[in-house]
Image 1: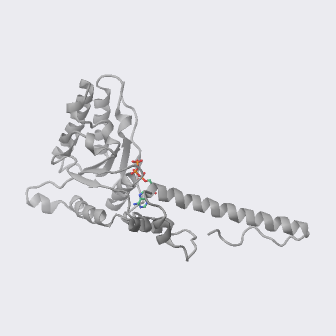
Image 2: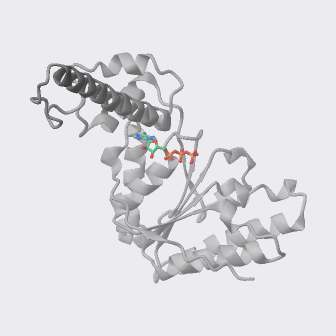
Image 3: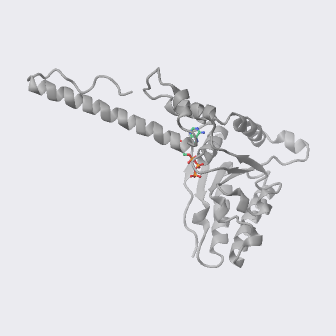
Length: 268
Ligand code: ATP
């Protein structure tokens, strides 16, 4: 049985401007991206620019979002796959799927291949209970090495994300593989304020909104939690507005008036 899924090729519109509270990370990434875009300087020194990036951090802290923004920033198409989808039940199936995904990415190069939850296929071979698990990691490593061998003809940037970097096989983190790592942490108060500010950009928000106060009241919230908070606030605003409209209409009908329209002020 072959893995038939053709990876969807996306063209993310996100960029570094959409990411809040990661200033030093973005600076570090800019350097990496410049070398990916123009590798000549590296080649002159007999080096190959790093094109494997490992993002690790707790759920919801923006790993997928950052991968999309890198792709948007590089203006390279993105192919995204959760590593769990690469696992097949029959012997050799997972290795075949990994080979196929990398082949598809090479076919679309230059592009970004994003493998989420890489720990599902990249666990430490020393602790593997089954031979199959060891073979899967070895296949992943050899697919990464093949990309390196094709460097001049093909250009695939591979980004992997995990919440559990501790379980990964050390071989995956060697030079030429995922040799660039970024740890994304739970945002600080100042970073939460930045994230909120960016997430509220373009929304109809009360100009007096105290971002600092909200940041103070949300310790432990990650980007995804703050996004959920903003969406919840937006739906409360919509609900309040419709309640207000409903009361106005009700009062108008009681007085037999028809002056209330439905399209005045915006919710905020
Ligand atoms: P998981 O490990 O569960 O896959 P994740 O780390 O990949 O989580 P994302 O899916 O990237 O997290 O984040 C969810 C959403 O939270 C994003 O789509 C984005 O809207 C918002 N978000 C997360 N971090 C940030 C940030 N730093 N700035 C702005 N928005 C953010």
